[in-house]
Image 1 (cartoon, rainbow, N blue to C red):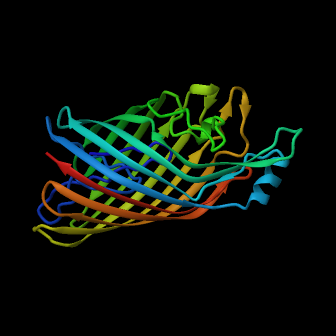
Image 2 (spheres, one colour; image 1 turned 90 degrees about the vertical axis):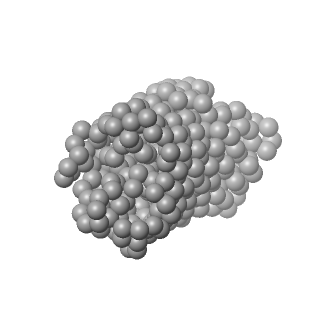
Image 3 (cartoon, rainbow, N blue to C red; image 1 turned 180 degrees about the horizontal axis):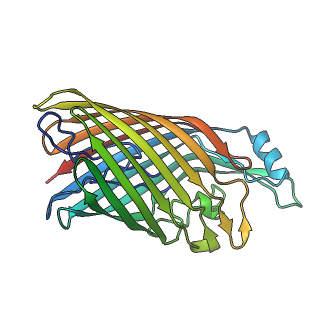
Length: 315
C-alpha cells in the first residue's frame, strides 16, 4: 500500500512478511515509496496528519521585499489531514486514491502595485480540500530485490477561492488546490534482509496549466530509507525504527507566461521515524524530518521541521 500527498508528498514504505522479520504492508510515514502491493481484492484504509513549521518574517521585511519586486511570504505553520483508500486489483497491481484537507495559519505577504506604498496582506486561516491523487503501482520483481513502476494523476479537486482577511482573492500558489491535472511517473525498489529493509524511490510530477492561468513547477522527489526491526520478532506488537534521506526538487511556478522567480528549488531532509505494528492489520507510525539543505530560488521562507503521524488498517 502507499499514499501520496500533494504539495509536500508523503508516501508509505511497504515491505514483506518473512520468517524472521515482518515489516508488513501497514508501513506508514516518510517519502519513500515501497514496491510491495496488496493481495488481490484486499483493501487498506489510511489516515494521517502532517504539521510543518516554517520561517516567519517581520512586516518590514515583507514590505522591503515587495518594494524590490519579490514575492516573499511567510506563515506560522501549515497542516494537512489526509485519508487514502487502496485496493489490490491483482496481486501485482494496487490502486490508491488519497484526499487531503489543507490548513495554513498566519499567512502574511508583502504587496506593492508600483504606485501606492507597499503593505502587508494577511490571511490568518486558509483552509480547504486539496487536490486528490490517484496512483497505481505495478510490481515487476519479487525476490531478492522487489521492483515496481508507478503511474497516476493528481486531480484538481482542491479549493482555489480562498481570500485574504480583506476579502481579496489569494494568489494561485497560496490556494489549497492548484487546479491542474498533473501526471505522475515513478519507480520503487527495496531489498529486505533478516531484520532490516532498504528501499528507494523516484517520483516525477509533470504539471500542467490550472485555474487562474497558473502552472505549478514540475517536481521530482527522490528518497532512500532504511528501517530496522527493534522489538517483537515473530510476535505482535512489533516496533521499527527508520532513517530516511530525501530530496525534493521543484521548478519555478508560472502565471500565464510569466515565471515567478521566487519559487522552486531543492530541499534535502533527514527523517527519523518509529513505526508500531500493533496487530497483523493495524499499524501506527510517525516521522520527524529536519531540513539539511535548502537551495531555494529568489526570496522564500524556509522550512524548520516537519512532523508526520499516520495509521493504517488492512482488511
